[in-house]
Length: 134
Image (cartoon, rainbow, N blue to C red; front, side, top):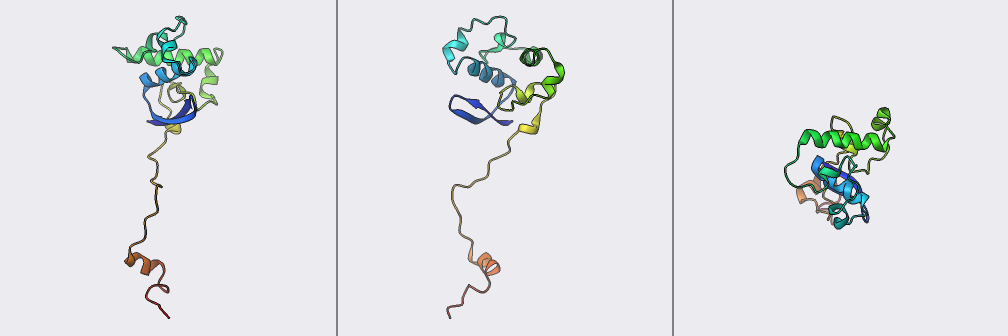
C-alpha cells in the first residue's frame, strides 16, 4: 500500500507494511537518525522491540504494539484513535485492528511528456483543420 508520510524533507510517498511503518515512526521520533533508532533508550515504548525492522517478529504482537502506541499518543482515549487527524503519521493506516485503506495512493499518472495524437485521431478531434490548406 502506498501512502504519503512525514519525512526529513517534508513528505514522501512510500509503499509500507506494518514492519516498515514502525521503522519509519522510529526514524521520525529520532529526527531521522539511524544511529538514534539503533541506540534508542526509550525501552518502555511499545514500538521499541520492533524498531529495527529486521529479524523474526511476531506479526500479532507488532499489530498490538501499534495499537498500544496510538492509544498512548491519544492519552488513553480509544475513540480518539479512530478520529486521529494526522494522516502523515506512518502508523495512521494501521492505528486500528483493520487496515485503513482510505489514505492509500493509487498508481501515479504518467505526466512526464505530452504525446502527439496519431493522424487518424487528429481527423476525428479536429475534422476542419486536417487537409484544409485553403
